[in-house]
Length: 114
Picture 1 (tube, one colour):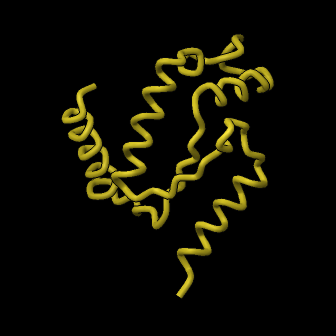
Picture 2 (cartoon, rainbow, N blue to C red):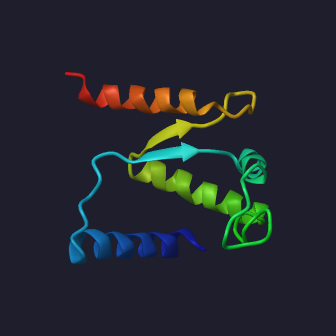
């Protein structure tokens, strides 16, 4: 989708959620950044799910879709000052949940420093 149209949709969604429906705006948004190749490896480890008999659902099965989604979410993270948490090391190894947790907590601590 062209960037201009994407921006129009994002503006419409934001207006709907925060102005019309009155959903409170979040103080902080964490974006857990996971490259699609790593995400697909983790998806393969999931237990069977009730909504599909396949190892990957429709979206998970499309590497192209996952890459496009990552691109859009990285753009949103930059545009909206979301806290981007890298879920992989520089060498591509997936970080443990504990390491990701520590990164989130470090980011939160920075918010409360005086």
